[in-house]
Length: 286
Image 1 (cartoon, one colour):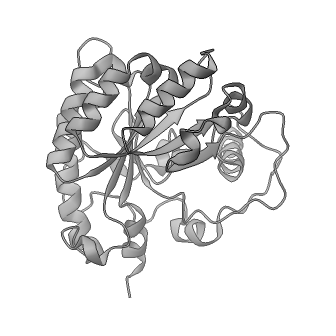
Image 2: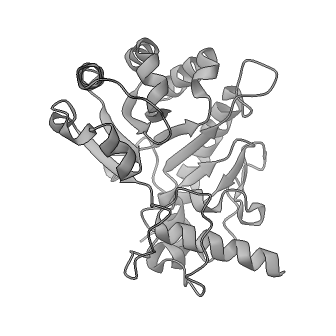
């Protein structure tokens, strides 16, 4: 039986890496070298603290997966290619999230990096793309996308997806596809949304290198688990005495006291938006 610490760490096999272009150079604000250096130290720490080595992947339900998202990823093509190459050399499985318009207009680059690195799935952000291709042009593009033989995840609002008529595409209807819908701003929060955070807890690395236990907590520095720049090998994740009861959140979700409080600036699931809004209100009252 895993102890409480190991139960939490097991959720942090999944890592969400959020990148932004640096302002002056040719890399990201969180350099690829720093990411890979931290990841090597993290795998050793994970082995020691969870008691189950990443090398024994057959004994794990899932192996390590690195999801990469952020703004302007294709503004730093060389840096992105280098990071993907290094992660592939480290035997990491990679999920790459990109803007739908970016890859529509630069499919050759996507084809190139899929051929060179261990990208297992592609997440496509549909919202705000402003594309209006003909049905024939869109279907030709989706057929090329299907030809990459990667799992696809569509992110966005149902309205945007319907405007592009994605669900009538023969290409998408014959591929490995998942859909993650953004909550509509005009819709009311459902009264019976699923509360447990077990499927939402993951290790999120913000553009400044700070580590958070889920996407909804990014920006709340007091809930950070540390930073990729921390050199303390024994406490790579600061799970002891965390301000939130992460195990309870994993099992039950947040106890929402003000369910009318929503931070409408996010595209998180309902429960996460409500919890984030409540935390924001709490901070304002302090």
